[in-house]
Each structure stands twice: as structure tokens, then as C-alpha cells.
Image (cartoon, rainbow, N blue to C red; front, side):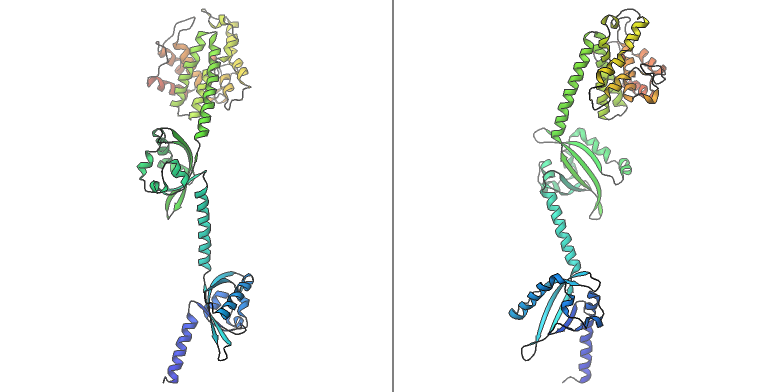
Length: 455
Ligand SMILES: [Fe+2]
């Protein structure tokens, strides 16, 4: 038989276990009034022990869960159903917590409930994490199921995640792409577009763009020999604790094809205009094309964008369009022009502008044509504009125009040769120095006018 002393010591030990348990334990009488509870219940509910000992357990249940909890306890009592109850409790400060409750019903001699013991576990963090996981899964499913945007996470040059759209773009499966090495994707990219990647992801460029998304358009090579144009954004993110990129891609092949067709049609119209201008004057015909070629080469040398290069080429191709209103005898006159005749010729810049100004080009082609005889020192025509007031495109055409005109034969003199022409643009203060420098380089690199032998 244990002694009283031993019994007291055991009771103290078990009470200490009860009091310090991390799980909440409470005991209620058959009315649901709280008879005893441990520290974990106090922490969980935010009420003091004194307050709790005056409360019924139902006062701790979230009002919306009262019915559910009642049905649960009825089933325990009637059917002995013992699954864990999961529901919400209300803390003293109104905060909602999620709990798992394991009840244990104690019965007296007459089979009536004497007390109920509750083992309560706060699972709020777990429920929150599960909810977040469900939301996360939903988001991922949306990303995976939509079939418009390719979505991927790229880290250390490898795909960490991608949806089916990306897999289809690469004509491969998600699994195959995940297991690919960086050089294997590289083989899928059009070789002409690899420099875009190298440039955009260079240390120098990244230090400038910082956390901004990197935007680019490039081509993937398809197995049928065609290209797929992608418009892609790479947004720097942190993924699994390391730097990565969240990439979105959309197939713009159709749009690019349409744009190319429009561009072709546009260039066809410009060429038709150019030919029209040259019909009455053989010098103008070839002159515009050659000026367009040299202007384009200068623009490329100046590192202008592809769009700017195209605008300059098109504008150059019709820069003398206004000459169609000048009598052919004046244009092809083999002797020196009279002042009146020269003034008539000078009018071609403004006439070209008048013809083009009402056409809704997406670029200022009419203005470029208008200004191609302006000079940066203000000695040009028709508006005597100075340096910053003159469009860069016009400054480039002005240099190309002079060089071409001086090197080819004219009705009144033979061609003067490329050296004289380059000498002139360097000495004359009317030409933009940067443009002249680029033009010199173009010729140093071996530029030759098409079909011309005297340069
Ligand atoms: Fe001209």
C-alpha cells in the first residue's frame, strides 16, 4: 500500500504534468461548466483562470460553429463516435483560433455523465498554412491551365518550373525541359538572336537594370525550319533562397508576320514613289537608292535602333520626291543653272514635304524629307534651321546625299571621286560631326555605291 506521503507526491507530479502540458486540457461538469483547466488553455483563450472557471465551454466556441459542435457531441454521447473535432474558438480579444479537440466523456455509477475532459490543440498555424497551400495550388493550376502565356522560373540558367505553354513553345515536354542543360536551350534559340541574350544579361546591363524586368523579343528555331517569335519578360525574383527569374512569354509569330507583310507593302509603296520621282530624271532615280544605302550604313554604324535605321532608309529612298514638279530640262541641264532655276530646284524639299505630310506614316518621314537640305550652321534650306532643330535622320541623309552627288557623274560635270567628297563633308561646317565620323568609318570599312565604278 502506498503511503499518504507517496500519494501526495504522485498527485503533485501528475498535476505538474497536467499544468505544464503543451496541449490544452480542461474538465467540465455535465452542464458544460469549466471545473479545471491548465495553463495552455489560458494561453490559448486569453482569459484568466478565474474568468474561465465561471464560463461554459460553449462560450469559447465560435458562434458559427455552435451547431456543428452540438451535433458532434450528440453523436459522441449517442453513438460513441470518437473522431477528432476540428473547429474554431474565439479568444477573449475576438481573435479566431482553429483547434483539434479530443473529448473524453466520464460517466458516474448511474451511467450519467459526470464530467467531460477535453484535450485541445491549437492548430491555427497549420490551418493557415494549409489554406495558403490551397491558394498556392490554385494559382499554380491557373498558371498551368491557361494556354496563352508561357510561365517559367529560371535559376542558374536552368528551368526550375514551367507550364505546358512553355513546353509547347520548345516543342518538348515539361519533364524533358526540366532535365535540359543550359546549352541545350541555347540550341533552340535562333543564332542571330543569341547576342540579344548576351547583351541583356551582361553584368554591365544587369547592374543598370537592377530589379527591373528584362524585356526582349527573339526567335526559337522550330523543327520544321520555321521560327517562332516570342515576346518575353524576365523578372528577377528570389526562389528557394537564391536569385532566379520569373519569366513570361507569349507567341507573337502571327503579329510579326503581319508586321513584316505591312512593312513589305510599305516599302513597295515607297519604292513606287521613288521610281516615280526618278522617271523623268535618270540622275534622281539611282541617286535616291544609293543615298538610301549609304544612309542606312551610316545609321547602323551609329548604333541606331533597327526601327530608326529603317525609317532613315525609307525617307532617303524618297528624299528628292519633290523634284517631280521641276521641269526635266532644268534637272538635266548640262550647264550652270541660273539663280531662278536653282531656286526652283531648292523648292523640292518643301514640295516633297507637301506631298508626304498628309500621309499618316507612323514616323516623321515628311519632316525628314523637308529637312534634308538643312545644314547645322544654318546655311541650308528651306528653313535655315540650326543644329538641334534638325532631325538626326535628316542630318544623316544630308551627308549621304552630298557624298553620293559628288561621286557620281552629273549632266554638268563628271564624278569628282570619293576622296573629294569625304574631304568636303569634313571641311564643310554644315554637317553633323558624329554623322561625318560614322560616314568616314563606313568608307574605311569598304562601303561602295551599288553599280558605281568611280568611288
Ligand atoms: Fe535633295
